[in-house]
Image 1: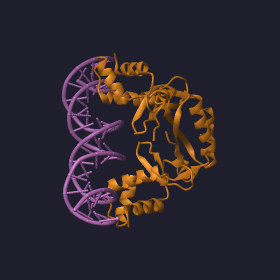
Image 2: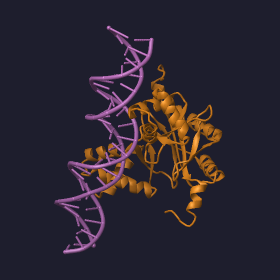
Image 3: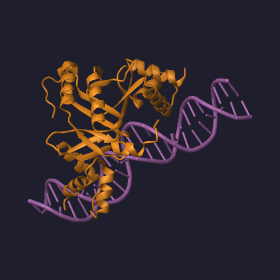
Image 4: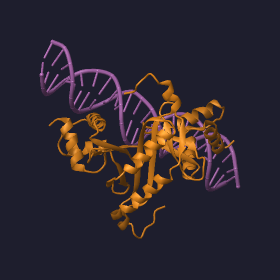
Length: 131
Length: 131
DNA sequence: GTATTTGCAAAGTGTTTGCAGAATA
DNA sequence: TATTCTGCAAACACTTTGCAAATAC
């Protein structure tokens, strides 16, 4: 099995966003002999090829997830369990393009991340308040 | 001059987004004796107090900028010269809240960053193509 | 046999923490 | 004197790079 396949499989089995190191650990547990640098390299390639979406952890770490549709998505991410939901984001896409154009900016890329607590995790914390 | 004043002044003089280390270097150059950890600490406090906006560099580094208005802003950031423009973002703000609610997420925070090349930098690169 | 790919470990980057000394009340 | 704040340097987490062995053509 080539590294690319190993990484792809790990992403597919994981489903949600995971860090390179998490994915690497899983691969090792699954019996694959693969280096962390290869995982990073492959993930970078997949991101560049548009087959994987990448977001940034609140701590700054990069998290990866197999892209579901043909376009890049923005996600709603649960800070408690890590579950993520792709969003219908056509509006913001357009807003982003507009904002760039109206200020004379070229080659505008955007990063949009929503982080909260999903319904399930909220339910578990019913009696508690955070903050 | 207290560290808080030093940091605040450096932010004010810089105007645009700058990393903690850049700001620290400036302070040293300006003759202030201050530690990098104090800069980080103070910046964190200012962010928590809502007086400074923080974004993330494409490389993951944290950049800080004195907040201009009463609310947090989103910015259009030039990847070439580092210049930033605060955006009118009421629309996305609402989109973000909506997206969170419609999926049952609570305490949703958002990160929205637009990175491109500003008009001036584009002009300088007229004959060139990137990528 | 040459060019590419891989894995290990070391280096690099940005940020946070531990602790002793200085300033303050 | 007790408390808080500050700076240095070390620790820390994540990512990238250097290099030799393995693989492919």
